[in-house]
Amino acid sequence: MQPNLIPFKDWCDSHHIGRTTGYKILNSGEIKAIKIGNKTYISREEDERYINSLPAYMPRKVPNSAKQSEAQV
Image (cartoon, rainbow, N blue to C red; front, side, top):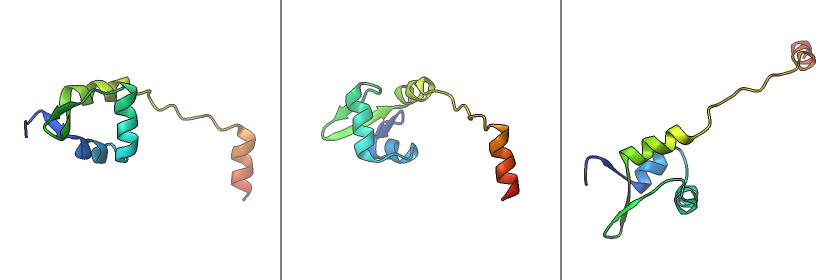
């Protein structure tokens, strides 16, 4: 295995997604893969590009009334 290539299964595991979801991401064109024989790999550069393309987490604001009702419980 090349040091800058991640086996597809390992890539899915490292992102905590199943292979079905991984193939959906792959087939949608969100990430590009490399085939060597019957093995599928993701380059580290492509992995970094994909991660940087994901939206940032934005916590939603909880209305004050919801905070007060949680405190009463």
